[in-house]
Length: 399
Ligand code: PMT
Image (cartoon, rainbow, N blue to C red; front, side, top):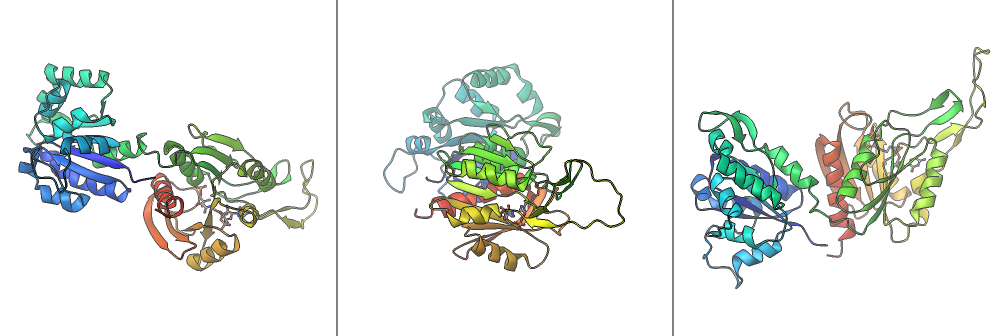
């Protein structure tokens, strides 16, 4: 599977400078980014800036000499998995809506069959102008998608709707867009959440896992085209969209559910915080507090990942390590002991990482000794980075 190509069209407007950061974020997210600028855009920002950030030649002039022979606007149009125009001026929106193709950007958009996302930015009165609105509605009806501008103070001094959507909104829209299907055809099995080991009907041993990390991995895999089964311990989170979610309570049930689904899976990820022990006996009725002391005997639960590691064949096996000290040392031990391909190490003593928070900070360590640190970010972004790593280093390692 090859890297996804995003063609970014930049038109003339002060918001053009914001696209430098957007292009940089898209590169970091693993996209191959090609920038096309209009002549007006190049008045606001030098093409060399985009060339340096995207590490690809920037096209402005339709007739500029290609490095090798191809019809530039056609080859770029064919290459695009997704087309983004941001900031999109009233002029460019009008051209596309009316079939005018008279420069590099408008001819390439006209020739592409890729989905096109348009993020307008202009003066509020221009944006509200009936002609512009009709052009937008016409393009929407034809399947072009829009990232609406924001309300706020505009460069022209006015206040109103017309400011380019924020960089995060633009990048997230692209990440969530269906064009990224690099897990298409992969069958993925993920464990998530805590397990509950009951002592009696009303008391149990558990841990603070909410399932957020594992659910983020499941929903991101689904968005990228994988067929996903999520085996979840008790969690308040709703089933992720398009994911086959199987709910269990105990480690033993999680183990049995994994065994039932593992033969189908190409990639298995253990993000669950599985209880290592359970009480030997579970009382059928609530234990009365008759004694001053109560001694419990615990017995070991199956180590789900370790068991799969013993017969993993061609499957990719990924584990997590939840550590409170010397995380890299203990993470490496688990990578080897469980016969994993990759381990995601989080330091759960950090208040903003690990259990029950929306953010995480991890180190990825693989069997070949490679390490990658992912600084504090949302669990959704961590999930994206983990999948990027798996696609790049484990699925496409021969490429
Ligand atoms: O759910 P959240 O609130 O979002 O929190 C996320 C998380 C902290 C639970 C997650 O990021 C995480 O670290 N998950 C693994 C927790 C854990 O149990 O780690 P461990 O180091 O004890 O286990 C190592 C690996 O073996 C894990 O992949 C675990 O799923 C697996 N394991 C452990 C015990 C067992 N009996 N069976 C297993 O499969």
